[in-house]
Image (tube, rainbow, N blue to C red):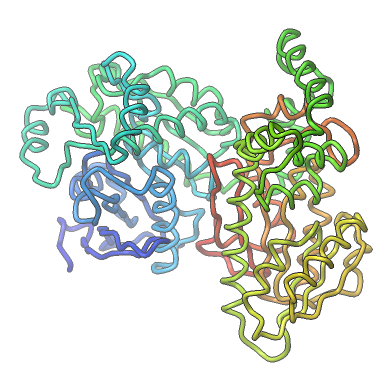
Length: 596
């Protein structure tokens, strides 16, 4: 369906399929007179409760006549399916944005670097989370009245909602916001009240997950270096301004601006006077597209610069936290040495290292055990730690991605898989087991002979038909990849790079893996953009070398850039529990386009 909108754009309506198969509704505005050169796209995200039908006037107000514009109805909003105001979770809403941008890039030929996002309220938090977790190389982001902290007014509202959801998981909250609290414009308030597609309720689950995610993104905003314009309203009855300022201050973006708009309420782009907001937005967008995208090479030295590098240096010097906190961790470390051996999982960690293949294989099995009765209870608490739950989800996602790639393989000869730091190789072997009818050759490499022996035992237990080669190799040594050029269809590296800070080592390994892949071959890699327990782990747990387990989280943008510098381009990312771990797929020699 096409609708003429003035003389500048032709509006179309369509749909796109999300990762779980749900089809969402969207609108596109095609310029009647496209600008010369590479096409550009503005993607608008509507506020919570609203829908894409309210975006058409914004396209006209922004006035970029030569550019495409797009907006979709979020799940449970407008013409998209789902219970009004609900979604499977906030993370799903973020993934929907990633899928949508990839869809329009594939369909219309936009480079991801020529996409800019404009987002309001909840949509702004969705976009910021997308930047943090998926690291798309978009040109910029305009954030209007970002809902990092919603004013709930009722005392203890969030704890109350969490408690209530224990009894009614599908709880909904009706918005207290009246249209006159959103804007000074009587006309816009009447339009809001009369719109039958505006949903006045929101899922309590989504509301709480929004709050938790927003807190994480504000805390870790330093990893974002995408150009950002933040517009804040000085009379906002809906969201707090302090978290918006904190997010802005922590951003690493070389181009960032914060504009506080006077006499302005929450619906910034629907106010009585939008001149200041529009002028700031147009100027920012012009500046974003006037400058070339930042070079990927800047990430090669990220282990020596930036907030993550500074925190890692402080960990190495035992300088994080205060003396009281470090004393508390020292007590925990001593208690672990004393009591840990009664827990099977802790005993393995103390003996082989908590980051070792042996320890991870135990976590994957997720079967608590211990001595003297209470040891199993301790072990269950250990296995249920947020990091280990994230590790298990990472395994599921990695196996899903690997299985999809195996199933899609076509061509003569066997499918060849390389794992450069296999450990016990449980995730690879269990996946290959499901393809016993395929001709598959697997090369499992590891630095520790003990891990390779464990992999052999597991392969025998699973009765794998595939031909398996076991090689003791160092994943960071160039010699490990000599003579393997162009041999493999799939290369896997999981749980390795997050254990090492030096990007030169990681890049050398990635280049070796890329050289081992045939043209169009797939690289599956994991990342750890952040972790909520970095200090506790560093001061209490030992690694496979018997040293304190100090981690330097590597931002998703950073690991993706290293992969790109090695000659592969990311095609997909899956986000794990609380965004701690990610699983990504890149292709060797993939043509520029929708890749993140």
